[in-house]
Length: 406
Image (tube, rainbow, N blue to C red; front, top):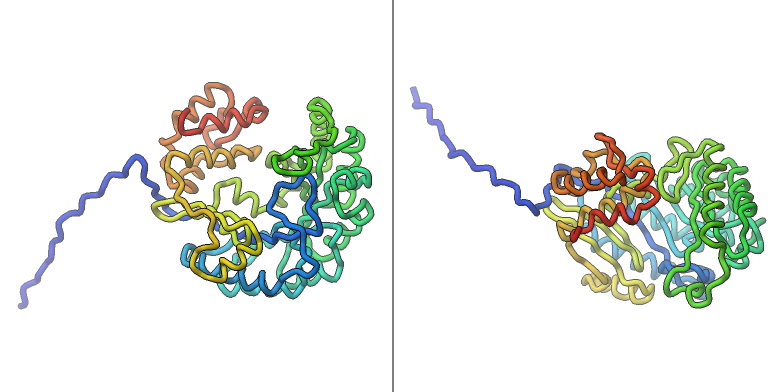
Protein backbone atom coordinates (compact mmCIF):
# COMPACT_ATOMS: atom_id res chain seq x y z
CA UNK A 1 0.00 0.00 0.00
CA UNK A 2 1.33 3.37 -0.97
CA UNK A 3 1.98 5.68 1.90
CA UNK A 4 -0.58 8.43 2.15
CA UNK A 5 1.28 11.67 1.87
CA UNK A 6 -0.32 14.67 3.52
CA UNK A 7 1.06 18.11 2.89
CA UNK A 8 0.49 20.39 5.82
CA UNK A 9 0.75 24.08 5.02
CA UNK A 10 1.67 26.50 7.79
CA UNK A 11 -1.20 28.69 8.90
CA UNK A 12 -1.24 32.08 7.25
CA UNK A 13 -1.55 34.95 9.69
CA UNK A 14 -4.43 37.24 8.78
CA UNK A 15 -3.06 40.71 8.45
CA UNK A 16 -4.90 43.23 10.61
CA UNK A 17 -6.71 45.94 8.73
CA UNK A 18 -4.91 49.25 8.74
CA UNK A 19 -6.81 52.19 10.16
CA UNK A 20 -6.70 54.05 6.85
CA UNK A 21 -7.12 51.18 4.39
CA UNK A 22 -10.02 50.88 1.96
CA UNK A 23 -11.60 47.45 1.84
CA UNK A 24 -14.65 46.84 -0.35
CA UNK A 25 -16.52 43.56 -0.03
CA UNK A 26 -18.32 44.44 -3.26
CA UNK A 27 -17.95 47.51 -5.44
CA UNK A 28 -20.78 50.08 -5.50
CA UNK A 29 -23.25 50.20 -8.43
CA UNK A 30 -21.92 51.84 -11.60
CA UNK A 31 -23.62 54.48 -13.77
CA UNK A 32 -22.48 56.20 -16.96
CA UNK A 33 -22.71 59.94 -17.65
CA UNK A 34 -22.23 61.28 -21.19
CA UNK A 35 -21.75 65.03 -21.63
CA UNK A 36 -22.98 66.87 -24.71
CA UNK A 37 -21.48 70.36 -24.47
CA UNK A 38 -23.47 72.44 -26.96
CA UNK A 39 -26.50 74.71 -26.57
CA UNK A 40 -28.29 77.01 -29.01
CA UNK A 41 -27.12 79.76 -26.65
CA UNK A 42 -25.85 79.84 -23.08
CA UNK A 43 -28.39 80.91 -20.48
CA UNK A 44 -27.26 83.84 -18.27
CA UNK A 45 -27.65 81.83 -15.04
CA UNK A 46 -25.91 78.64 -16.24
CA UNK A 47 -22.54 77.60 -14.81
CA UNK A 48 -22.48 74.18 -16.47
CA UNK A 49 -19.92 73.28 -19.11
CA UNK A 50 -22.03 74.45 -22.04
CA UNK A 51 -20.94 76.22 -25.21
CA UNK A 52 -22.79 77.99 -28.01
CA UNK A 53 -23.27 75.48 -30.79
CA UNK A 54 -21.57 76.09 -34.15
CA UNK A 55 -23.82 76.35 -37.19
CA UNK A 56 -23.17 72.67 -37.89
CA UNK A 57 -22.48 70.37 -34.96
CA UNK A 58 -19.34 68.23 -35.38
CA UNK A 59 -21.33 65.11 -34.54
CA UNK A 60 -19.05 62.61 -36.28
CA UNK A 61 -15.95 64.06 -34.63
CA UNK A 62 -17.75 64.15 -31.27
CA UNK A 63 -18.87 60.53 -31.56
CA UNK A 64 -15.39 59.38 -32.56
CA UNK A 65 -13.83 61.21 -29.59
CA UNK A 66 -16.51 59.79 -27.29
CA UNK A 67 -15.55 56.30 -28.40
CA UNK A 68 -11.87 57.04 -27.76
CA UNK A 69 -12.69 58.48 -24.33
CA UNK A 70 -14.72 55.40 -23.41
CA UNK A 71 -12.18 52.90 -24.73
CA UNK A 72 -9.43 54.49 -22.63
CA UNK A 73 -11.64 54.12 -19.54
CA UNK A 74 -12.68 50.51 -20.11
CA UNK A 75 -9.76 48.93 -18.20
CA UNK A 76 -11.03 50.73 -15.09
CA UNK A 77 -14.47 49.12 -15.22
CA UNK A 78 -14.06 45.73 -16.91
CA UNK A 79 -16.72 43.27 -15.86
CA UNK A 80 -18.97 45.84 -14.22
CA UNK A 81 -22.60 46.34 -15.22
CA UNK A 82 -24.28 49.70 -15.77
CA UNK A 83 -27.43 50.46 -13.80
CA UNK A 84 -28.12 53.70 -15.71
CA UNK A 85 -26.99 56.00 -18.48
CA UNK A 86 -27.54 59.76 -18.39
CA UNK A 87 -26.97 61.90 -21.49
CA UNK A 88 -26.69 65.45 -20.16
CA UNK A 89 -25.45 68.83 -21.22
CA UNK A 90 -25.57 71.27 -22.69
CA UNK A 91 -28.50 70.28 -24.86
CA UNK A 92 -28.36 66.62 -25.91
CA UNK A 93 -31.60 67.06 -27.87
CA UNK A 94 -29.55 68.99 -30.44
CA UNK A 95 -28.02 65.68 -31.51
CA UNK A 96 -29.49 63.87 -34.48
CA UNK A 97 -31.39 60.62 -34.06
CA UNK A 98 -28.54 58.82 -35.83
CA UNK A 99 -25.91 60.12 -33.42
CA UNK A 100 -27.88 59.12 -30.31
CA UNK A 101 -28.55 55.69 -31.82
CA UNK A 102 -24.85 55.20 -32.62
CA UNK A 103 -23.90 56.42 -29.13
CA UNK A 104 -26.16 53.94 -27.35
CA UNK A 105 -25.17 51.11 -29.69
CA UNK A 106 -21.54 51.82 -28.84
CA UNK A 107 -22.29 51.72 -25.10
CA UNK A 108 -24.06 48.36 -25.42
CA UNK A 109 -21.17 46.95 -27.45
CA UNK A 110 -18.66 47.77 -24.73
CA UNK A 111 -20.58 47.54 -21.46
CA UNK A 112 -23.32 45.28 -20.09
CA UNK A 113 -26.47 47.12 -19.03
CA UNK A 114 -29.04 45.90 -16.55
CA UNK A 115 -32.13 44.68 -18.44
CA UNK A 116 -34.15 47.52 -16.92
CA UNK A 117 -31.38 50.13 -17.00
CA UNK A 118 -32.62 53.71 -16.84
CA UNK A 119 -31.45 55.67 -19.90
CA UNK A 120 -32.14 59.40 -19.61
CA UNK A 121 -31.68 62.15 -22.17
CA UNK A 122 -31.92 65.84 -21.29
CA UNK A 123 -33.88 68.00 -23.69
CA UNK A 124 -34.62 71.68 -24.21
CA UNK A 125 -38.23 72.46 -25.19
CA UNK A 126 -36.87 74.84 -27.81
CA UNK A 127 -35.25 71.92 -29.65
CA UNK A 128 -38.04 69.38 -29.16
CA UNK A 129 -39.36 67.42 -32.13
CA UNK A 130 -41.89 64.61 -31.86
CA UNK A 131 -40.17 62.46 -34.49
CA UNK A 132 -36.78 62.93 -32.86
CA UNK A 133 -38.09 62.00 -29.40
CA UNK A 134 -39.67 58.84 -30.81
CA UNK A 135 -36.41 57.94 -32.56
CA UNK A 136 -34.49 58.46 -29.32
CA UNK A 137 -36.91 56.07 -27.62
CA UNK A 138 -36.46 53.46 -30.34
CA UNK A 139 -32.70 53.66 -29.73
CA UNK A 140 -33.19 52.85 -26.05
CA UNK A 141 -33.87 56.16 -24.27
CA UNK A 142 -36.60 55.42 -21.72
CA UNK A 143 -36.61 58.66 -19.74
CA UNK A 144 -36.56 62.28 -20.91
CA UNK A 145 -35.69 65.19 -18.63
CA UNK A 146 -37.12 68.47 -19.91
CA UNK A 147 -35.68 71.83 -18.87
CA UNK A 148 -39.03 73.62 -18.66
CA UNK A 149 -37.96 76.11 -15.92
CA UNK A 150 -41.24 78.04 -16.25
CA UNK A 151 -44.41 78.28 -18.32
CA UNK A 152 -44.54 82.06 -17.96
CA UNK A 153 -43.29 83.87 -21.06
CA UNK A 154 -41.97 86.85 -19.10
CA UNK A 155 -40.01 84.60 -16.74
CA UNK A 156 -38.60 82.57 -19.63
CA UNK A 157 -37.49 85.74 -21.39
CA UNK A 158 -35.81 86.98 -18.20
CA UNK A 159 -33.99 83.64 -17.93
CA UNK A 160 -32.75 83.89 -21.50
CA UNK A 161 -34.48 80.65 -22.51
CA UNK A 162 -35.01 79.90 -26.20
CA UNK A 163 -38.55 78.55 -25.70
CA UNK A 164 -41.86 80.03 -24.61
CA UNK A 165 -44.68 78.61 -22.52
CA UNK A 166 -46.50 77.07 -25.45
CA UNK A 167 -43.35 75.31 -26.66
CA UNK A 168 -42.87 73.97 -23.14
CA UNK A 169 -46.36 72.48 -23.10
CA UNK A 170 -45.93 70.93 -26.55
CA UNK A 171 -42.54 69.46 -25.59
CA UNK A 172 -44.06 67.72 -22.57
CA UNK A 173 -46.74 66.14 -24.74
CA UNK A 174 -44.13 65.00 -27.28
CA UNK A 175 -41.94 63.49 -24.56
CA UNK A 176 -44.86 61.68 -22.92
CA UNK A 177 -45.86 60.19 -26.27
CA UNK A 178 -42.32 58.88 -26.77
CA UNK A 179 -41.36 57.52 -23.32
CA UNK A 180 -43.12 56.47 -20.14
CA UNK A 181 -40.93 58.43 -17.72
CA UNK A 182 -40.57 62.21 -18.00
CA UNK A 183 -38.94 64.61 -15.55
CA UNK A 184 -39.72 68.32 -15.59
CA UNK A 185 -37.22 70.87 -14.28
CA UNK A 186 -38.97 73.92 -12.80
CA UNK A 187 -37.19 76.93 -11.29
CA UNK A 188 -38.48 79.41 -8.74
CA UNK A 189 -37.40 82.71 -7.13
CA UNK A 190 -37.16 84.10 -10.66
CA UNK A 191 -36.89 87.79 -11.63
CA UNK A 192 -40.28 89.43 -11.04
CA UNK A 193 -41.86 86.19 -9.80
CA UNK A 194 -44.51 86.18 -7.08
CA UNK A 195 -45.57 83.19 -4.96
CA UNK A 196 -48.77 83.02 -7.02
CA UNK A 197 -46.81 82.74 -10.27
CA UNK A 198 -44.49 80.11 -8.79
CA UNK A 199 -47.44 77.97 -7.68
CA UNK A 200 -49.04 78.41 -11.10
CA UNK A 201 -45.91 76.99 -12.74
CA UNK A 202 -46.03 73.91 -10.52
CA UNK A 203 -49.75 73.45 -11.08
CA UNK A 204 -49.24 73.54 -14.84
CA UNK A 205 -46.45 70.98 -14.57
CA UNK A 206 -48.69 68.71 -12.48
CA UNK A 207 -51.55 69.06 -14.95
CA UNK A 208 -49.64 66.88 -17.42
CA UNK A 209 -49.63 63.94 -15.04
CA UNK A 210 -45.85 63.81 -14.80
CA UNK A 211 -44.47 61.58 -12.06
CA UNK A 212 -41.16 63.34 -11.39
CA UNK A 213 -40.37 67.00 -10.76
CA UNK A 214 -37.13 68.80 -9.98
CA UNK A 215 -37.73 72.16 -8.29
CA UNK A 216 -34.69 74.43 -8.29
CA UNK A 217 -34.11 77.75 -6.54
CA UNK A 218 -32.47 80.20 -8.96
CA UNK A 219 -29.05 81.10 -7.61
CA UNK A 220 -26.48 83.54 -8.94
CA UNK A 221 -23.46 81.37 -9.66
CA UNK A 222 -19.93 82.78 -10.13
CA UNK A 223 -18.70 83.33 -13.69
CA UNK A 224 -22.19 83.71 -15.15
CA UNK A 225 -23.85 86.68 -16.82
CA UNK A 226 -26.29 86.94 -13.90
CA UNK A 227 -23.37 87.12 -11.47
CA UNK A 228 -21.92 90.03 -13.42
CA UNK A 229 -25.26 91.75 -14.04
CA UNK A 230 -27.53 90.49 -11.26
CA UNK A 231 -31.27 90.79 -11.87
CA UNK A 232 -33.69 91.79 -9.12
CA UNK A 233 -34.81 88.58 -7.43
CA UNK A 234 -37.35 87.80 -4.69
CA UNK A 235 -35.83 88.14 -1.22
CA UNK A 236 -35.22 85.19 1.10
CA UNK A 237 -38.58 85.48 2.83
CA UNK A 238 -40.48 85.54 -0.48
CA UNK A 239 -38.42 82.63 -1.79
CA UNK A 240 -39.17 80.61 1.35
CA UNK A 241 -42.90 81.28 0.96
CA UNK A 242 -42.70 80.10 -2.67
CA UNK A 243 -40.82 76.94 -1.77
CA UNK A 244 -43.17 76.00 1.07
CA UNK A 245 -46.22 76.55 -1.14
CA UNK A 246 -44.74 74.55 -4.02
CA UNK A 247 -43.82 71.64 -1.74
CA UNK A 248 -47.30 71.60 -0.26
CA UNK A 249 -48.83 71.64 -3.75
CA UNK A 250 -46.82 68.68 -5.05
CA UNK A 251 -47.37 66.69 -1.86
CA UNK A 252 -51.12 67.18 -2.23
CA UNK A 253 -50.74 65.50 -5.64
CA UNK A 254 -49.10 62.39 -4.17
CA UNK A 255 -45.46 63.36 -4.61
CA UNK A 256 -42.78 62.66 -2.03
CA UNK A 257 -39.77 64.89 -1.56
CA UNK A 258 -36.92 62.40 -1.59
CA UNK A 259 -34.02 64.82 -2.07
CA UNK A 260 -33.46 68.56 -1.64
CA UNK A 261 -34.76 69.39 -5.13
CA UNK A 262 -36.33 66.10 -6.27
CA UNK A 263 -39.98 65.02 -5.97
CA UNK A 264 -41.60 61.90 -7.35
CA UNK A 265 -44.55 59.59 -7.24
CA UNK A 266 -43.79 56.28 -5.46
CA UNK A 267 -41.43 54.13 -7.53
CA UNK A 268 -40.50 56.96 -9.91
CA UNK A 269 -37.30 58.27 -8.38
CA UNK A 270 -34.37 58.97 -10.69
CA UNK A 271 -32.18 55.88 -10.40
CA UNK A 272 -29.20 57.66 -11.90
CA UNK A 273 -29.34 60.53 -9.44
CA UNK A 274 -30.03 58.16 -6.54
CA UNK A 275 -26.75 56.46 -7.41
CA UNK A 276 -24.93 59.79 -7.03
CA UNK A 277 -26.60 60.54 -3.70
CA UNK A 278 -25.92 57.05 -2.35
CA UNK A 279 -22.22 57.45 -3.21
CA UNK A 280 -22.32 54.94 -6.03
CA UNK A 281 -19.72 54.91 -8.79
CA UNK A 282 -20.04 56.72 -12.09
CA UNK A 283 -17.93 56.98 -15.20
CA UNK A 284 -18.14 60.29 -17.02
CA UNK A 285 -17.18 60.69 -20.67
CA UNK A 286 -17.34 63.77 -22.86
CA UNK A 287 -15.91 67.27 -22.27
CA UNK A 288 -15.92 68.33 -18.63
CA UNK A 289 -17.36 65.02 -17.39
CA UNK A 290 -16.39 63.76 -13.94
CA UNK A 291 -15.94 60.20 -12.66
CA UNK A 292 -15.88 58.58 -9.21
CA UNK A 293 -14.64 55.00 -9.38
CA UNK A 294 -13.97 52.50 -6.59
CA UNK A 295 -11.35 49.76 -6.60
CA UNK A 296 -10.69 47.15 -3.91
CA UNK A 297 -8.07 49.36 -2.28
CA UNK A 298 -8.82 52.93 -3.35
CA UNK A 299 -11.34 55.48 -4.65
CA UNK A 300 -10.43 57.60 -7.67
CA UNK A 301 -11.81 60.84 -9.06
CA UNK A 302 -11.23 61.86 -12.67
CA UNK A 303 -12.22 64.86 -14.76
CA UNK A 304 -12.00 65.43 -18.49
CA UNK A 305 -10.88 68.58 -20.32
CA UNK A 306 -13.75 71.08 -20.49
CA UNK A 307 -13.21 72.69 -23.89
CA UNK A 308 -15.00 70.58 -26.54
CA UNK A 309 -12.39 71.03 -29.27
CA UNK A 310 -9.46 70.43 -26.91
CA UNK A 311 -11.17 67.33 -25.54
CA UNK A 312 -11.90 65.91 -29.02
CA UNK A 313 -8.32 66.39 -30.18
CA UNK A 314 -6.80 65.00 -26.96
CA UNK A 315 -9.13 62.01 -26.73
CA UNK A 316 -8.18 60.89 -30.23
CA UNK A 317 -4.51 60.76 -29.22
CA UNK A 318 -5.39 57.94 -26.81
CA UNK A 319 -2.55 58.84 -24.46
CA UNK A 320 -4.55 60.08 -21.48
CA UNK A 321 -4.00 63.74 -22.35
CA UNK A 322 -7.79 64.28 -22.42
CA UNK A 323 -7.80 64.03 -18.61
CA UNK A 324 -7.66 67.22 -16.58
CA UNK A 325 -7.61 65.36 -13.25
CA UNK A 326 -6.92 61.82 -12.08
CA UNK A 327 -6.46 61.57 -8.31
CA UNK A 328 -7.03 59.13 -5.47
CA UNK A 329 -9.43 60.33 -2.80
CA UNK A 330 -7.76 60.63 0.60
CA UNK A 331 -9.13 58.16 3.13
CA UNK A 332 -9.98 60.94 5.58
CA UNK A 333 -11.92 62.91 2.94
CA UNK A 334 -14.39 60.12 2.20
CA UNK A 335 -16.75 60.68 5.17
CA UNK A 336 -17.44 64.26 4.11
CA UNK A 337 -17.87 63.30 0.45
CA UNK A 338 -20.29 60.52 1.41
CA UNK A 339 -22.36 62.75 3.72
CA UNK A 340 -22.32 65.60 1.21
CA UNK A 341 -24.40 63.33 -1.02
CA UNK A 342 -26.27 60.96 1.31
CA UNK A 343 -27.63 63.64 3.64
CA UNK A 344 -29.32 65.35 0.68
CA UNK A 345 -31.78 62.46 0.75
CA UNK A 346 -34.83 63.14 2.89
CA UNK A 347 -34.80 59.60 4.30
CA UNK A 348 -31.02 59.34 4.34
CA UNK A 349 -29.42 55.95 3.73
CA UNK A 350 -29.28 52.59 5.56
CA UNK A 351 -26.46 52.47 8.09
CA UNK A 352 -24.90 49.49 6.29
CA UNK A 353 -24.59 51.47 3.06
CA UNK A 354 -21.72 53.47 4.52
CA UNK A 355 -19.36 50.49 4.64
CA UNK A 356 -20.65 49.07 1.34
CA UNK A 357 -20.12 52.24 -0.67
CA UNK A 358 -17.04 53.75 1.01
CA UNK A 359 -14.93 50.70 1.81
CA UNK A 360 -14.49 52.12 5.32
CA UNK A 361 -15.64 50.62 8.62
CA UNK A 362 -18.56 52.44 10.22
CA UNK A 363 -16.39 52.85 13.30
CA UNK A 364 -14.42 55.48 11.37
CA UNK A 365 -17.36 57.91 11.59
CA UNK A 366 -19.07 56.72 14.77
CA UNK A 367 -17.83 59.61 16.88
CA UNK A 368 -19.03 62.15 14.31
CA UNK A 369 -22.41 60.40 14.07
CA UNK A 370 -22.81 60.47 17.85
CA UNK A 371 -21.79 64.13 17.98
CA UNK A 372 -24.38 65.05 15.34
CA UNK A 373 -27.10 63.10 17.13
CA UNK A 374 -26.21 64.81 20.40
CA UNK A 375 -26.54 68.18 18.65
CA UNK A 376 -29.93 67.19 17.27
CA UNK A 377 -28.73 67.35 13.65
CA UNK A 378 -29.18 63.63 12.95
CA UNK A 379 -32.34 61.65 13.57
CA UNK A 380 -32.22 59.15 16.43
CA UNK A 381 -32.63 56.22 14.05
CA UNK A 382 -30.53 53.07 14.62
CA UNK A 383 -31.17 51.81 11.08
CA UNK A 384 -30.56 54.90 8.95
CA UNK A 385 -28.20 57.84 8.69
CA UNK A 386 -30.55 60.76 8.05
CA UNK A 387 -30.93 64.39 8.96
CA UNK A 388 -33.36 65.44 11.66
CA UNK A 389 -35.76 68.30 10.93
CA UNK A 390 -33.19 70.69 12.40
CA UNK A 391 -30.40 69.01 10.43
CA UNK A 392 -32.44 69.39 7.25
CA UNK A 393 -32.78 73.14 7.91
CA UNK A 394 -29.05 73.49 8.65
CA UNK A 395 -27.79 70.90 6.19
CA UNK A 396 -24.51 72.66 5.39
CA UNK A 397 -23.64 72.73 9.08
CA UNK A 398 -24.51 69.05 9.43
CA UNK A 399 -22.38 68.02 6.45
CA UNK A 400 -19.46 70.13 7.71
CA UNK A 401 -19.38 68.01 10.88
CA UNK A 402 -17.78 65.26 8.77
CA UNK A 403 -14.89 67.36 7.47
CA UNK A 404 -11.50 65.91 8.34
CA UNK A 405 -10.50 68.78 10.63
CA UNK A 406 -13.63 68.60 12.78
